[in-house]
Image 1 (cartoon, helix red, strand yellow):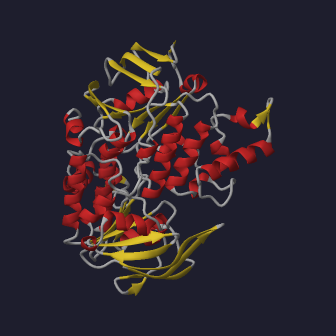
Image 2 (cartoon, rainbow, N blue to C red; image 1 turned 120 degrees about the vertical axis):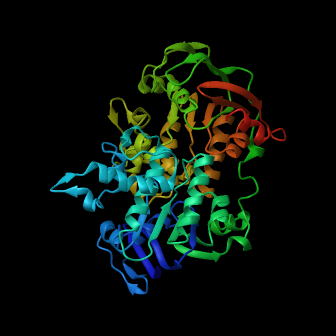
Image 3 (cartoon, one colour; image 1 turned 30 degrees about the vertical axis):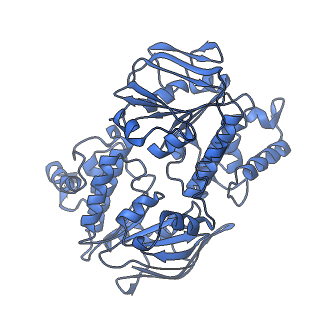
Length: 499
């Protein structure tokens, strides 16, 4: 597959600018760049979701003009979408073979045994003990991601040629064992397909890819082989500067105050038991654990989104019982969820509306919205957080993932009474530049006296960003580590208490 002079624009934004790219047979091609660099648009062109304004797309030497995703699938091009495209109200088998049922449908009715048998063949390739007959709604986010890979395998094999599989951030929610399974799949795919692999994790790109294209501002700024470059060099190409120094802004970490701000005492819910922790004014505490350790529900319980059966929550010396997110917000608690596009934002609304959604009173005079104050406030936060958007009225869905996340964060910062901020993997899916911006913001908020409960995306992130690290396993807190500049705990020690 090849792109020649590919250009694509949207209102106010040039997403691709004269891109030349080649996907060779039997290789894994890495594609990296900041959020907004053009990666997602490029993948949408390759899989038939978008048409080029100018330039050409060639498939196996012939010019191709896909009439949509189904047409691309028929010609052997399939994509695993970052935000997932599965239907939760049907079975895993139905999702894997959706649009590709073939002999599994007769007279308009499913032949379930045949459908499940065919789907199971692809599920077995991705591992993870996935069952074809299982309801999709009962799967974790990571399990659904593996189903996406199986679906792409099934779609890509519809054509009579070697397929091209596009993987858009396939590893963002996978645990270590699942990562190894996926990497094994990708290596096997290389023998009978071409793979385009997009990831913000530099170590993954260097480990799995044969070649790497680096994108910035809609164009390709570099092509290299992993053996010839370092992570720092890739960082510099991506953002145009050296980010390796001070990436976590550790020099900005300030000692926490002695006064406790948030206290959980023997907190118990459906998936966690007797969880006790304290976060002081200006302190960042990382809660580390593998998926289904209970840490996500502890965070949701603090925000009133998960019921608590026993135990207490104390905020600034006063016992509270957040029975709903609205109650938690009134108490001065903010929450950034892991799935921002599902739980953290309204994609159909514009940047201004999303940013002021949680605290409309901050841009109102009395009972009425003050448009001038709203515009001024939103513009200040856009500038302060360096949100890349054509205007305040741009729909949030048109922004890159990193800029969407900044808007989701900013909506809590409007509240002058904010006391606790719960961050559930706030840098998941963000590029290195956007991550560094979020890290700097967390440091600033802690310096302001906020108590921050961080569910980190990686071990390194959790250790480097926190004053203390707490580990969880099977719904219980298993250990606590002091973490400060020059005295960080070892990764292996933390990991041992998580698994």
